[in-house]
Each structure stands twice: as C-alpha cells, then as structure tokens.
Amino acid sequence: MPDELVAVRTRESFDVRAAERVGDTVVAVVDGAVAGFVMVVGDEVEQVYVSQQYRGAGVAGALLAEAERMVGANGYGRAWLAVAPGNGRARRFYERNGWVDEGLFEYSAMSADGPVPVPCHRYVKRVHKGGSHA
Image (tube, rainbow, N blue to C red; front, side, top):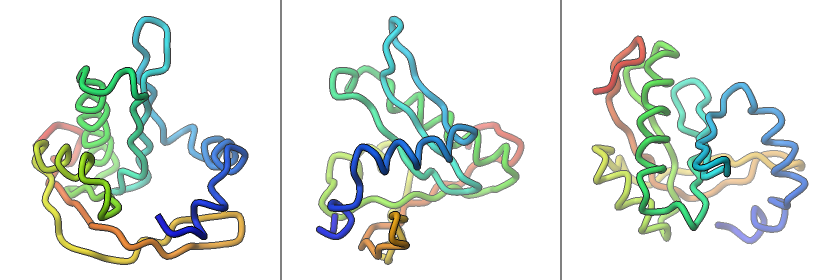
C-alpha cells in the first residue's frame, strides 16, 4: 500500500468507514467471536477480512461465497475486487476460488482527504444474477 494510504487508514478512519458500510457488511461469527467480515457495494467485493486465528478454517471461503451471492442479488452478473500486487496470499486464495486476474489498474481508495490512488490487480468472477452461485 502507498505510504499516503497507510498514514490515513487509522483505527478511527476504519470506524467511520465501517459505520457507513453496515448495510453492506456480513460478519462471520465462530463460537461467539467475530471471525471476519466482507463488504459488498454494488458489484464490488470491497473488503474481505478474516482474523488471523480463523485463517485456514473455511471462514474466508464462506464469506467470499456470500459476497458472490450478494453481488448476484444486487443484479450483477460479474463481481470484481482489488488486490494489492504484494498480497500473494490473497491473490492465490481468489484464484483457487475461480477468480481471474484481469491485470493492473489504479484503485481509488477513499480517505478523509479524498481518494488515494493504489496500484492493484483487478480480479473478476461471473456470478448468477438473483444470488445463486456460478
């Protein structure tokens, strides 16, 4: 991530962004603890996060499947997401789950001071409109 984005993505900025996205967020709970979450806005899977202790336990796959369903339920036939080039773990995860890397593009990440350009890979996957899986 660019230093400019790291500097403005504080705990406080996350709290503000998360509050704005409550209606677009699905939370995974395991044994009463928050294990992760996914945010979907339109056809974009905006964020996928799994707490470190739940990685490798199927939480990410379940959240991603729900995100794909949500994109279809939003009326889109194709989902997309942005992944930083250096995030090899995430890139391998998406590829194992049928997502295709369409190449590099400049993602506009929002900060309190406005958009911050972030070089990312654009991953896409066909989904079925109406919410069923591809």
